[in-house]
Image (cartoon, rainbow, N blue to C red; front, top):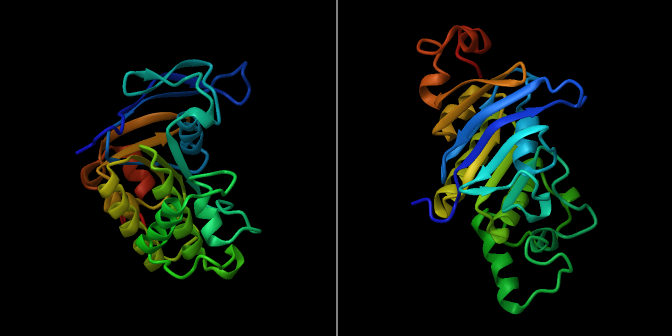
Length: 245
């Protein structure tokens, strides 16, 4: 089921933007071939943890393991990771087709079979016929679909999303989550998703990791951990009486 997608282990990671004060400490496991959500208050360290996994930040102590492989010192470009941000995933001067094709060749020199792969990826995210358009001609949801199409052609076993759908309205956000779930299941990618929306976490993820104050406070089933009737007091306070949006 999980194929070659690795389990990711954050083992005793310590980090601080001031190296003299490593005030963040992360220990957690992201299961192979599953969707895990990182959730918690703003400024709690969710994006920092994601950046440590991606390689954009380096821990002062500890290890990042992909399966049995220590990736702690591995450059971003050499990690088997695709990442989608909330904005700025696309190059404005390139067409939709070329933005996706970058996932195959940075020089945009594609064989006919590779061009067909790009077209198939666009079709799979419901953007068939959009290849000649520029990002400025697309809606926010369409731009994120292009980013997902690039994930498909890159075919990396790990996908990281940093509030990728946060700027979208509820209905469109749900559509994007359904598309993400479909792509993730087809490819069994180990997926870690930062979100501020508990409902998104419960809908899309099998596991939730609650981050607060620069550390992992709790890990468990997304359905249970983010249920105000069953969770710990700190998370219940974060969710509020309605269980979060």
